[in-house]
Image (cartoon, rainbow, N blue to C red; front, side, top):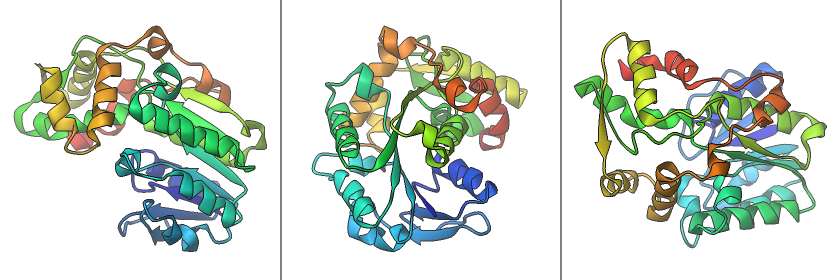
Length: 279
């Protein structure tokens, strides 16, 4: 049995589906009750209280660990989750980390994530670490303004990074959970090309078949909006990468191709599959 945390999110939802379709027994964990694929067990649990994960971890052989936003805040103890997994008899953990753990290791949230990676490495469990860059699904932040005003408001309109499709993250995670060959692997996950917010807007407009205007936000405006849904430190770190990506953050990684045997999906593919959210 495989436990998927964050099972209702942009990575956890497709991962749960991929595992279930592969015939695996899956327990989907989320903070609140949620619909899951047929045959999948759902357990409501808060990662901030690892003891509450015990019913989900009972009998599990593997765990996909995706931290909720509050688990990145000061005072959180995500290492306790790895301890709970080990105590529950879990054999393998696949951790969704972040590209910034390698490219900007001294940011506050990156230091905490690197420490969690080290705890996992030293735990005695089998492990794999996924380090994605920016998510294509972050464009969903623009859905309401596109629907209501035909506009995307975002900072750094002409600064691009090779954002990754969450479906590619999910399929890579499934491979790491199921295939012993990926034990001990650290995979940097990106899309196939550098793409700017303005170009993303154009791709969404093409999928919609109607114009969408782009409006540049200041950094302060963007931070204020992001801080409503994530810790301020995480918003600050994210904006630093988006506004001034370094050479490592501009690199298109070969790791999706290495694991899945195919090229990563472009943003236009993600936009076409998710266009209903913008109508």
